[in-house]
Image 1 (tube, one colour):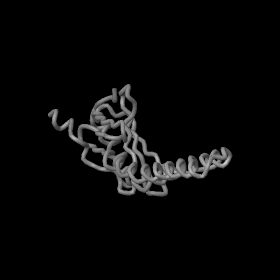
Image 2 (cartoon, helix red, strand yellow; image 1 turned 60 degrees about the vertical axis):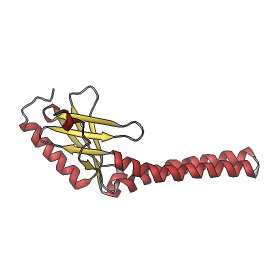
Image 3 (cartoon, helix red, strand yellow; image 1 turned 120 degrees about the vertical axis):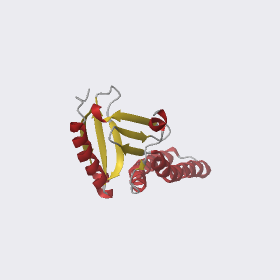
Image 4 (cartoon, one colour; image 1 turned 90 degrees about the horizontal axis):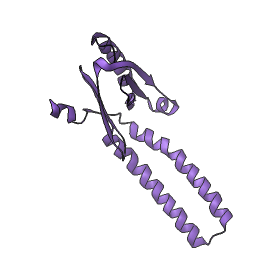
Length: 163
């Protein structure tokens, strides 16, 4: 029984999550580029120093924008069974959580503007845990809606009181 609990959850998030995470990260890098431009122009540093700073920032941005979506896609997983909800998320600091169906109190779906653009949704499963809710990010909208409906029905029939 312990082996089943320690395995990776079975499902990856939507394939569109990689593009979504890339688009979400891009404004931050554009802001950093704008601030860097203002600082470099006002500082009056030499062309060599300015060039080094700019190319270092561009290198970090490209590295982040290429690696981060791929890495997160490989890590983020989820699974819902008759007995529990399993999630795995993170980037450097990875977290795996398991919540018994009998402990489920509420199930919510959220779609912000970027998620709507990419046809994605996030599912939040609130339990009686002091660790807070379980979150499944970047699911296809249809999959998220199915999970919410299924978990709501299953939690009602599980016979627990969510505590």
